[in-house]
Length: 134
Image (cartoon, rainbow, N blue to C red; front, side, top):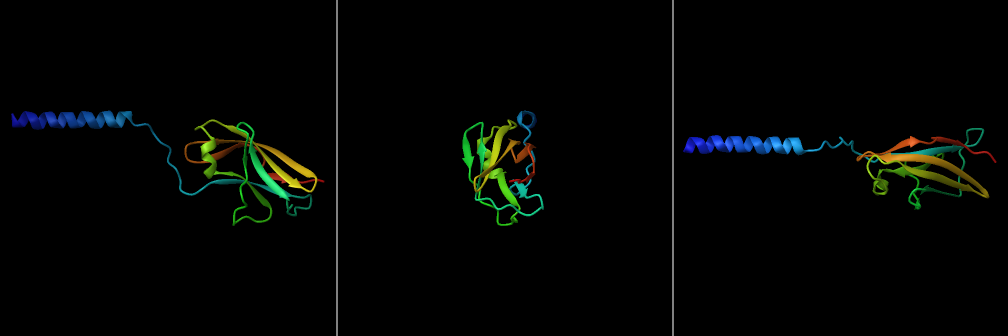
């Protein structure tokens, strides 16, 4: 009887392990750190354009993101979105955004599409450099 119980325990344990392994869904392997996306804005001579105001709008959800410039940024770059905004997304569903930059009476308006893979927000379409022309 003791032999059967041990044998039955092994079979039961093996079945539980197999069911657990088969029922697990694969999760993406996430790299550490926050991924952020930014846009470079220059004039025709390649000099940095200093905007008076800038923000990113999620046009699909009517949300406005006011992201402060990152401490590592040079004057040429403005933030668009980063991984901290993941809650806007459903996994693998792209969303439309617009970067709005204001300099005096001029407005820069640049469209973007981003999606979230469960780990990071990725750029689907949109420019990484904007040439500002008066």
